[in-house]
Image (cartoon, rainbow, N blue to C red; front, top):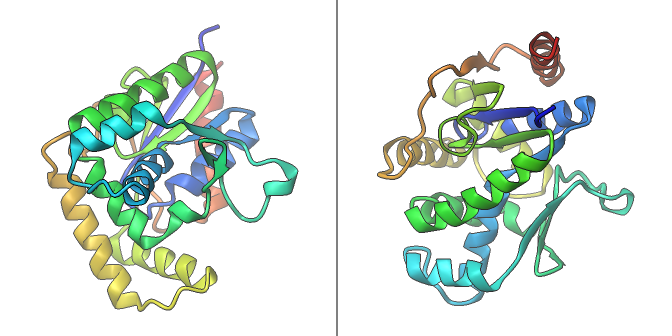
Length: 229
């Protein structure tokens, strides 16, 4: 049988990462966090003095450095959803700052950066059953996925989730700041010139606002079961 592909996209803080990881764990699929690859690209730029606006410079960095994603080992289970290696260095937490979040949104507008990373993502999905999440997965990376999901929630609910996540990490940030940055990120993602965020044809629109994480995972796994009969 050909690999089964679950493609999940939607706006920032909609719960894509947590849901995708739990669905992958329950189904025994490989979880692929594509956003981590863009965050790592932003980190690469920062470390090497390459501006996030410098598309050619970023592409050159990607050609000379290796980004690897893997399921966390027993020793790495510290709350992370995935282990991210940059040239064998574990950068899983370093890329999860608000600065790298902003950076990933900026570097992701570059067509050739996206092309390089999308090719990596598609190769993975050709070999394994995957749950892949990001912001262009259903219409650019895996347009022929057996299950395409647009996961979203209201801006207020997403900002509350994001704010709580940052507080748990010990970051001193106000809800108002988080909400403002989320709205700015939404505007940038939905109006970027390359692959703006939108609902793909055939995508299942799933509003997570009134649902718990477990409920979201339950309904997605039930849908997969129906499709695989």
